[in-house]
Image (cartoon, rainbow, N blue to C red; front, side, top):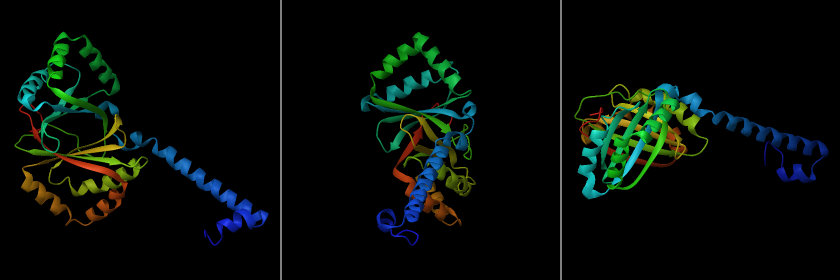
Amino acid sequence: ELTGLSIKGSATNGTLADRRYFGGWLRSLFAYDIKKDARKDAHSSLLAKKATSGLYEIQFHNVKPECLEAYNNLSELHSNADYPCEVAGSWNTWYGEQDQAVHLWRYYGGYPVLTECLNKLRLSKAYLEFHRERSKMLISQRNQLLLEFSFWNQPVPRTGPNIYELRTYRLKPGSMIEWGNHWARAIKYRQNNNEAVGGFFTQIGELYVVHHLWAYTDLQSREETRNSAWLKEGWDASVHYTVPLIQSMESRILVPTKTSPLQ
């Protein structure tokens, strides 16, 4: 039964007026859904900082176990190369997928700078040689282009020692606006302790994926910091409303490499 009318009775046995009312009600319902979904299609412009300042690439490299040290040494040399982009952070996964390297690149200037960088790499003999040597050390690799949430901190260099947690959330399609609305409030409970490093969502690659990057002194401080968040009024509500938006989630504990700006 719906608003006091039997759907079956209204659609088949009701008066002509009833049937017209019910049909109009359905059309208005579908029109509302289409309008709402059309707004969500523009979530990148509603939630992100300008792409000229907040375009990132995250790389996940699964390295042959016997090659991890050589891979790190080779990557450190390449990170000093002169390209129109910069490494925001480089890590090895400590807990999570083992023998994995994670790199976060920043492109100031957005997509034009990304294109410029790719064109320079294709013409660089030094890079092509580096790429050939590195490929011998890899089992698999993948990347994503990310935009930066407007309400998160921007990742800036920091001194160590720190460990980092990369929390990855795969959301239900169409839920990014709702996620952003809740986290715009929730992040206020976690920024005072300086552990919030950066928040991103995918634009190219696997879509409706969110990455939150946190810094902690060690695993014990991580536990204490996360527990203290539950003592702040409003944090529990934020968790309550965002959990139903998640399809799956993953946590990696990362250790910075020697040359990572995020130590």
